Image 1 (tube, rainbow, N blue to C red):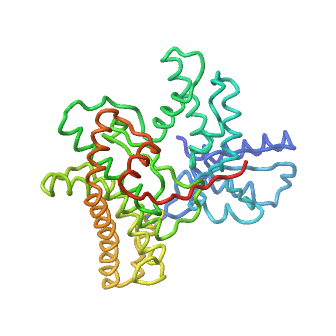
Image 2: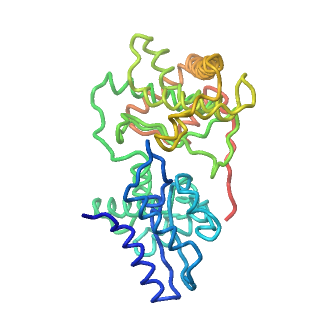
Image 3: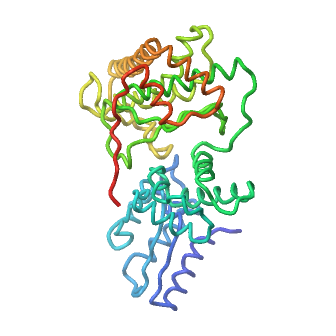
Length: 385
């Protein structure tokens, strides 16, 4: 009944555009109709391909579509059909990345216009605190802060609402704090384990805060503030992040024993495995040498494309990759355990403080740790605006 409707709509669209020339056509999520043809198993002539074929025909450049400019947007430029991307059709690609600190500040100024914000709140400080946020994230951040302000019956958005809104956007809704003493203490040791390793390893990002207030699926959280808009990451930074991620499991093992370790480190271990495997197979940061060992079905965008492909390395190399990944993860694990063992006194003090206050600020944590051990200076990138 609906065969050819998509192609017919494309014809109507271009007919209307010609009548209204000069004209702009904007197609959002172009990958919905412009996806690579023949990607399924056995080919086929599905409705989406007919729509794409009609779009290609309208954009072929033979008819006098003068005065019509077509703009399209997608998050998946890698899956678009090559015919759609040739010169004469979509021949300009404009990459829109997440904004830098200056961009974030200007976006925040736009979204703050219609909100009552307390004079002591610095949009510059918010922009510095939110590396990696997109424009939509920043709009959501100020909306969440405004909702919290209304709930708390305040006249204007203060820095407390901004802080809570950042936490909500990054980690999810706030849950009910734990009351059970044993579970709470175990989670506190786990989080302080992350924080102490992150503080004492030189190349790790500085700790922003540690909290026992559950958010989303996490029972507790340790926030690290990455260096501003970090494009390149060194091997020592990756190794430091692996050690920091292992800090929670290492603290559980050192304090409660291997029989008492919990499932709380599941997400940490996945993160460690992913980082270690990328170090070996993508970035060439292992004993296997500077070679990329990607490829195989895992990297294929479509199901059909992976049927005839094979791994680009032998089973012997696959075994060596697994060994290297294990070695990198184990190195981080042992480093984390060593730091936990050597700093047991300050860990116990921080855990008692965390259970009492439920949240410890990064500066306060650093100050307490510096009384017991030498804290390496973390390089902070301070951009000029």
